[in-house]
Length: 482
Image (cartoon, rainbow, N blue to C red):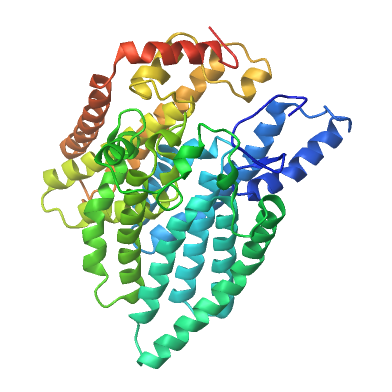
């Protein structure tokens, strides 16, 4: 702090400063810093901020998401056809908060990956042999998730609901179910124990008590009111916070990733197919519980605390658990909508929502720094910046490739990905030899839905509110390429 100046997100206890967040990513970045320092010559200032942030996020936020995607696809593949699994996995990766927070050195997406890994381990264990090792692995991922981000506890509560429902509603006598439940709980706790104990030792060493987090000792007085009152800053819900978190054109979850709206249709499909299937029944109640947990949290916590970032960042842990019901909604449209025209129109509409999600979130994530004063993340910030020559900086820019080509290639990649996702999903329609006119209707439906979503965002633009935010971003832009 003496060398580089004051930074945010700090806690102070007895005159010593610590990060206010859960510590796992801080510790995980240390080997990266050490390697860069050795490569840079070993002296005190050998590591610049740009390479440190670049490689820290590459290994600790981007790579975990890439490793998660095959397992997400495998999970989806157990319930839907492969093309649907392909399209929905790609939409999650490129059209949701998973992309936004893979590109930032923040804990939200890494914690979401770990929470999903905890669920996947438990799901795989319950579907296969039920070995104790699977429960321990699930617990280890859960413990690592808590050590990465405290609020991911909401997602882990949902995973606990899944385990309880799946085990207790299974076959067998009551005492056998209780025995299986206690076995799962014991080994899950054993797997989580190293991370839980390590976290408590860290908090004890830094803040004087194993259960005191950095939020108790925030250094910035402006942030302190967000965490006082209620339970850890969580109060009674407010309608304004709920609506802004989910529908605001600036950072609403469904405004940036409208494909997640398919999850509400897919929940009905999941409920119908879960009858007589304890594992699937557990997934239904887990998803419903997660929607309630996160809706209450985002409606009850300070909306202003989300910060200048893409979307409602604390809902990142919810998103991977909405992909299955969204995929089931698409699968239902492929198999049970009668008639050539209706099938293609329904698939086209779903494909349009997915394409719009990739287009909106992909372009906004190229900026990923969204001031609260703006009205619209896409049409108020991202597109005006690109049109003015403020293209997203990238490794290509730093390597000297002349402007504006690196930025144009990135934007073109986002547009191409959106078109490809739509094409994959449109071709899932349940017709062996569809007429060319039917494919045209599906494409028209997809284009119409995508255009409708984009038009809604465009109409929500307020140039007066956006002017100050644009001026600030232009003044702080890392690399301008006209």
